[in-house]
Length: 258
Image 1 (cartoon, one colour):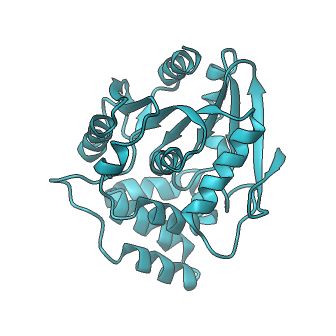
Image 2 (image 1 turned 120 degrees about the vertical axis):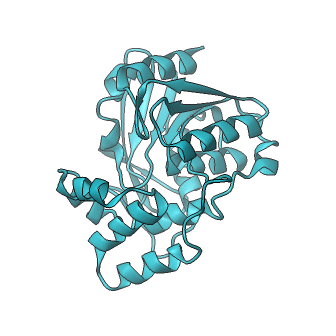
């Protein structure tokens, strides 16, 4: 992977492939650019696809103190490297970050968001002290427990589902990236849809959700689309918090090229 230097000097690892209008793919919690390995080939015949490791993950650098503004600057550097403006697709907590970047004026021509992380009534919010708990677990070196806590308290996974996660090949990556769960939780702020701020955003925004996702994720996607003056929602085939890759690829390619 090549490196782009962000405003604070942090190096951000990225890779580009394909030909056509630029689209930047941004991952959510736990993951790095490899989460898009199956999606990139679907988009590359239609777009120049840019993937990257968000700071603190994979081959990218990090800074001693985290701030959402630094991640916004990272995306701005990627888009500048991609030609000065781009479509952005982001999922889960990455969708929240992409919205913050667009609100901050990063030159995003269109946004496509997959199930942004918000909690709206009647769905309960995570514990009020969740950020302090995550930091305490990490300070004690309990990275596996940090990941489990996030899955249980912020994603709402049942114990048997967390056990399945622990047995999966990606669990080592989950533990390696556990410190970035603090970053994503900071991005989520109070977990509510910032409707007044979103009402000022003029960027055309597609918000997609899976037809088999959780109720709170579906409701968050719909509320996000409703809050955006140029937003619209779309439900696509998939599973919990995941859309079938071939279908998502076709939708994104059409969205990015029209």
